[in-house]
Image (cartoon, rainbow, N blue to C red; front, side):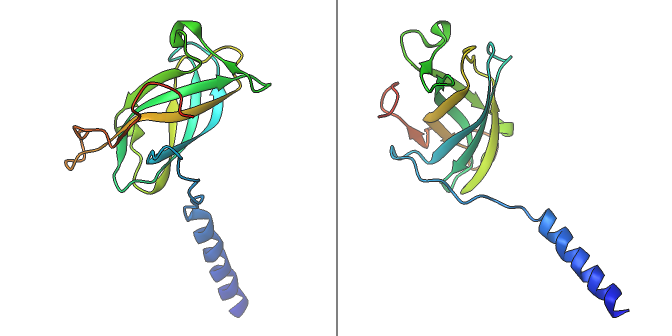
Length: 158
C-alpha cells in the first residue's frame, strides 16, 4: 500500500512538472530603448505570404503589444547581408508591419510570432528590430493612439 502511494505521488509530481509552463529568462534589453527584443528562430525563403520568419519575442513593457512595424535584415550562410531588391529598394533591410489578436504579446513575457515577409532565396538567417510598437488600449481590443516606441528615422540602428 505504501509503495502504491509513493508511486501515485511520484506520478503526480512528474505530471505537474511536465504540465508547468517553463519560460526562458528574459534576454538583454535592446540598446536603443525598445521595450521588445526579437530572436529569429526559423527562416524559409519565398515571396511575401509564401515565406516564413518565426520569431521569439520578449515584451519588457507593462502593456500588451499587438501592433508592430519591424525592420528585417537577411543574411546568407556565410553571414553576408542579402536583400530582395524589389522589396527593400536601395536599403540593406526591409520593413514589415503586422497587427491583431494573434500577435498579442503580454507584458513581461515571451511570445512566438510567425511572419511572412518576402525572404530572399539565399537567406538562411535574419535579424528583426522594432521600428514602431503600439500597445493595446484599455478596452483590450483597439490599439492605443500613440506608439509605445518608435525609432526617429527609417534606418537600421547602429
